[in-house]
Amino acid sequence: MNTVSKRILSFMVLATDAISVSACSNMSKRDKNTAIGAALGAVGGAVLTGGSSIGTVGGGAIGGIIGHQVGK
Image 1 (cartoon, rainbow, N blue to C red):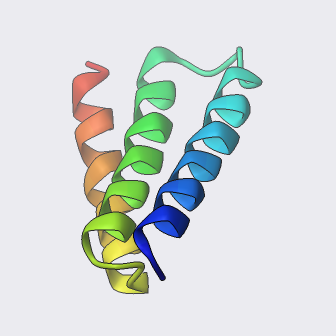
Image 2: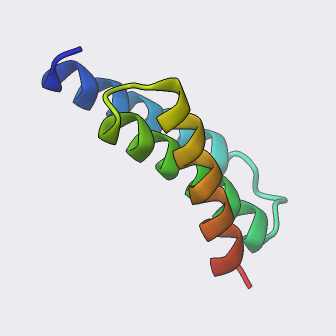
């Protein structure tokens, strides 16, 4: 996967996640932060590891944990 494809994929994932999160108006602030952190972490993990499944899942998990803690 080349750099341009990765950037397009990252943008599409972020756009989809942003729309999904904005539709959940009844979520608590902590829940929103967890979802946003997981989405950003997954995209970051995918980009940093060249699209590796393990990198994507690991990034999402770490991002979700960080987002959850920020939401306190």
